[in-house]
Image (cartoon, rainbow, N blue to C red):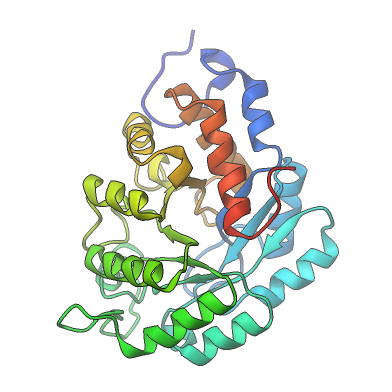
Length: 311
């Protein structure tokens, strides 16, 4: 029999640790809130948006959110929705350098055309830029973006951006900002009544100077933010975290306060659908219940996107 190793559950049919039908049921209708697609400047991506949606729908998934650092992609999602019926696909905007960073006007314009998801800076974040330049061999030509000033106060431009998010009931993802920025941002959002917040893959070692601690993640979850756990965290092509450790973190923050995503779409990683299937099966194998997985891949994403409960 296949000898188990730490990592992806590649040999699911041989280990017989998890019922394949359970994985299939949980993948069916799942929504991935974090998907990359082609074209994106400086980064290699596997499929364009249409190919990504067709592949995911064929695998049984229910929908996804497109993410592109370099341009607002709701218009792309609009076109794909017309070509791929019975599939929930949405665009987003990332406040990186290519769209002007903390650009109120870009946010307002994106919201006006129906964009449901906004990301704080990622590669251009002051907490990320030097790391991603080293790890991805980039020269972004920027000192980095922070959403707070030297005293730890949220920048004035962020007030207007958060007002747009609240007025349009958008989902706010924290991107690659620092733990201090994350705490200040989440506190301000909750004060304003913004309750759709996802703390973006806080455990990733590939893109952060400083990552959240376990206790900080638990505190944010208890305050009302969702914690994102993505497939790249346990992929041997990315962070290569122990699946057992990932499952322990999910138990600590609670499935009700967590989402499972992939952060896939790039090379040399698995496809989005295959990555999510393997993440689901690996979490089941490590003791996360079917009910909790369903909450994290269906119920929570649907609520965050303003969709009806699980179909």
